[in-house]
Image (cartoon, rainbow, N blue to C red; front, side):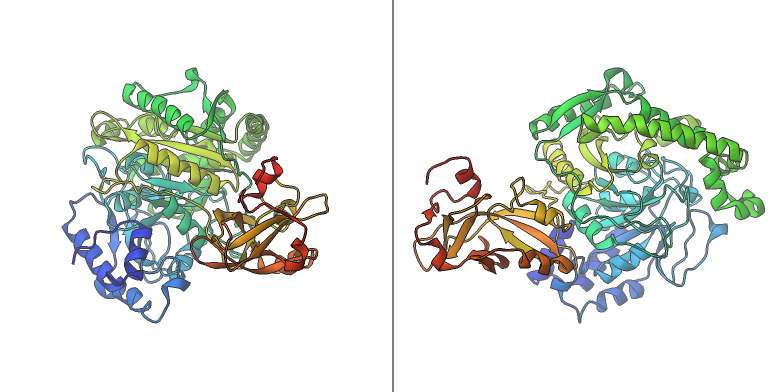
Length: 599
């Protein structure tokens, strides 16, 4: 059977409604891969028996317990999958790991099904997708163009619908450039948010595992399943579940006109101008900023001593097997033997100065937006000048990891010749949710189709937060809502906003006497009630008790029925306390009452 489903949301809906099973989905995936045009996407594909074994393991599990139940995915071949060779794009380097990388295992534990290992620029060195003995990976729209790299096969596998999501890595843009060139979403999370245990290092202090998906909502689902502190990774970090940035209408900083670089590509220049207009339509305020410190940081990555870190990662191999490497890759990494320790310290001092200057940009902007790349090249053009053109592609990407920033590449339109264009949204560490939410708006405003597929962009591309393990959803309807006086009691406990919604139409709403702060009373009734605006917050289990203990009488926690019929723990009021209180049910909103509206 042919399964007309590509996004994670589509597949999960199909499983829940019984339209197909994981076994049917993976059989369909394998058939489509066999029939697909050769683009040099794969290095190692799992056999049907291997893939079906993962699908069979789901038979005894509930879809409600596994957020990625039956979702096929691909893995860049510098990331370990147990029992399958890891080559890093170099056959002489290959080894077979006994266990999967930390993030891969988390995804499998969440129900995802690995399909195979994908092609890459050798040792993840390059933004082009051509530096591989397994062949240049070809763009999903036009095979004469580069796919972008180094996570080339992972991006093309998603864009062509062979898998629903994939893993890449990103040190200098490898998780963003291929997304921009293939009309998909590429998420480079904050450094240390996704473990790099089981990942062949490029620059270990900067390496990030990245996520490719057709939509921002899918990328958010994968991030939620894959993130987590890993004690085995010395660069892994714990992050708060709440987004450090939560603004409805962000200030978006863009480079000054003279700092924009399109390398003669008038179409990409036109599309970036259109993207800024779309951002305004989506509610953002655009601010031109001086990107000079960011651009100087970008130059440090390859023109400074950080190339020595690439050399350190594979020094023994390059000394003993250098002839087995791609010549361009070998030349770049071998140069890392030259910088001295003094060079490294001088570069660190300069980076720290530039970090201070770059930090000042956040006084004027909540998010930065750049083209993902200034242009795209054909494979023929790239091979004729592999170093210079690769450097051009890193103009807007190389600074991100050095400055410990998060980034999301989003589809943003097409040139007149049909080649994709993308923009990248950049934020401070731990702003992934906000970036994904705005990326969803940009994608919906700029493009009509997903990847290289004849499938329409969903009407709803909501990348809203998902409920994480270890958190309890709590409904609030008054002073604990966002921006109101008691909201800090949630924020102080590392709670985060899940969604804004309404109750079912079975409640009466009162303004209770007393204060400050004034408090509302929500009471369920058998008839004559109304629907009330509420927020649902996710509260860490370990802090739930202290939060409830601080709720004063006559308020307490009970079960609140939401507009979709679901029940959720939330604030309710004892009935005796509303005698003589002002009934504001007609307003349906505590914010309206606080603004002085009359019921």
